[in-house]
Length: 99
Image (cartoon, rainbow, N blue to C red; front, side):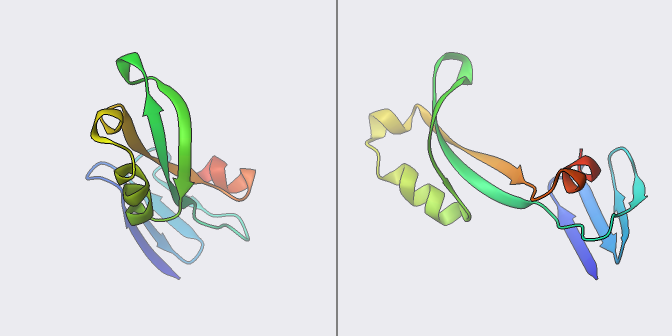
């Protein structure tokens, strides 16, 4: 299996079979049997003062759906909202390798 994931210029992950290489600590490792990469969830949230999250209004598997949800609110309310990107792991062992 070959997988390349570019989250940003500082966070690049490369996977060859069970070997996992990335640009943040730890730089290389052998993945546990059954490892699954995390899913990215797009979360529509309501923000308070100082960009503090007050409530989650919805969570979606793709960005377009999250943007459509955000567009349903009026312009005044939309200024207080944002889309957060959240990685979701299916097992604790998988999360430990992505910290």
